[in-house]
Structures are given as C-alpha cells and as structure tokens.
Image (cartoon, rainbow, N blue to C red; front, side, top):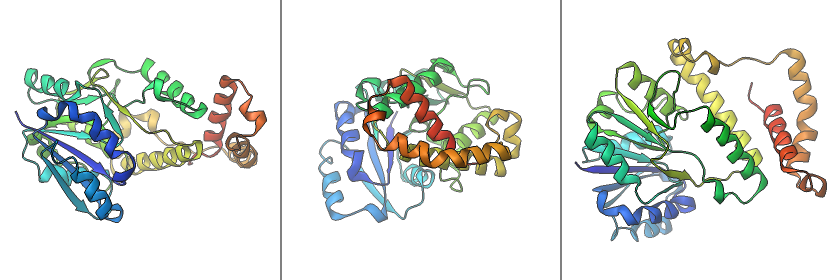
Length: 298
C-alpha cells in the first residue's frame, strides 16, 4: 500500500514549515509528498525553503495559478502514484501516529473514506478570541461523532485530514472545482449518495494551527456561508437532507437592528480597550457572538 500525501498551499511561507516539521517523524510511511502551490505566492525564497525538506521526504512541488483548494487537491491527485491518497491542509499539525492510523483504517477496511480531527488544540490558544473558538468547537464536539460511520444525521466530515483509495477519488471525479469553499461538503455528499462508506474518527489527530482575529473569522464565516449557498443552488436536492443549513433571510426589523448595532459592537469587540479587556471571559464570548451575528452574511 503506497501513500501519497497531498497538501495544497496558498501561502506556503506562513504555516507550511510547521506542518512539514510535524510530519518528519512519520516520513517513512509517506511514499510521496506532493505540495501544490499557488503561483501568485510562489517565489525562489519559498522554493528554497521547501527544498530543504527533500532529504526528509520524496517531495514534489507543483505550481499552478490561484484556483482554490479543490482544484489544487485534484492536481495533486492526478499526478500521484499512491494507492491511497491522503489530504492535509497546510496549517495542520499532525500527531506522531496520524499516518499510521490512516493506514490501519485502509488495511482493515478496503474501499472506505477516512476523515479525522480538524479542530484546534485547546492548549495552543493564547488569546481570548482563541478561547472563544475552542469553546465553540467544544459545543460542536458534544453534538457530533467521536468515531463511526458518517450518516446524514451525523455528517462529520472534513477534507483537511482525509484519506481514501485513489480509485474512489477518480470514481467521484475529484472535487468540484466550481466551489472555492464547501468543496469537501459536496464531495462527501456525493460519496455518501454513491454508497461509499465514510468513517469519521476524532482520534485520527491533526490540529488546525490557525488562530484568526475576530474580523478575519467573520470574513471566513461569511465566505463559507456564501459557498454553502452556491452548493445548494447547484444541488437543490441536498436540501432534502440538510434543511437546517438552508439559508434564511433576516426579517426587515432584524436587518435594521443588525445595521444599528454593527458599528458600535464591532468597534467595542475589536478595539481591545481597557473596558473590554477587563470583562469576564463569558461576557467576552457573548460579545464575540453578537459581533459575528451583526456582521453575518445574509
């Protein structure tokens, strides 16, 4: 069984070295490492940095125009030689047994898709909004699978830490490059509808090394919501099983209230003034939620 690890990277100088450093201890289990880099952010300096890992991995670097994770993952898969494709985002910090656990799943259960942990590591947070993110993810964990088969009721899936046989990836036609976000949601639904078994296991551990500011989170949150809307516009049949994700416009009165609150609430939550800094953490969390709500895409 040969493993091809594929990592798309928009800005490789930012987080990718830490991701690769975490993988070195299990590099012998990775038959080839393919990094797909967007051309806009590729430079000789970045190339030199990545080439320092050639002695550690069977490494190939592919370059392409900016086109999103889906197209980058597809490009890596097309050029891969492995029986099993594994995908990681470029800000994921792998635990030392990550690759081994993916391999064990495929050795014991041929023909499945495996999706592992994609949360942030709680002890790595060092600021109040980071604590808010950890608290938010804690709520998601409480209502989600720990390990087991993905179903429409328990639809835990992420491609930031995923593996599957190459033949299944090809059978599904890869990621839909029309979607610049939510492409993994669409990929998993298509796999499920084709009867392909998907297993989620939170203990297949890699951690998102991503700690955005509040307003960067708001921007990404809105991009994700818009991307979900694009998926449902192309595949309205998905809504039959995911009605809770259907976009609902705010009422006129709520829109007016959001506009009135948007500027003062956002200023207060992002100014880091003495009053906000001295607030209890739970109250900060409520203000963060309010800030996200009044800045939400509708």
